[in-house]
Image (cartoon, rainbow, N blue to C red):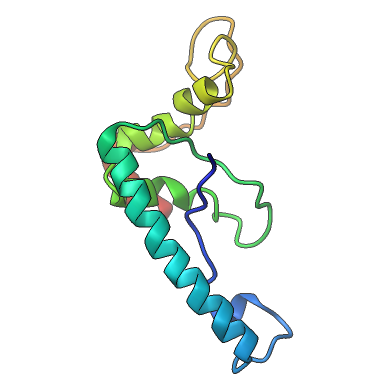
Length: 128
């Protein structure tokens, strides 16, 4: 099951649509209600130990859209390390690719990003 954590909540992301549009207002309100329900269910899933992966097919603006999901998972109850693993190890397990991906081991494929500090402790603030 795929859960989307980011929703329409800013009228400025719709160029060419009048900010007072009734359709836009309805979309924003539906997005808010949907987000609340999704977050409630996701908090429960995390609490119960359900495997939650990170990902989207969204490739637009803003460029850090997908990266924000890690911080949202922490806000919903994961530890920073669990959020990192949701985007690496857990994703590989959910895709049944753990023999090839998901952890840094000899013979596996990996992209590595080096950052200053210990991000497993500071993930929510790593977006800035």
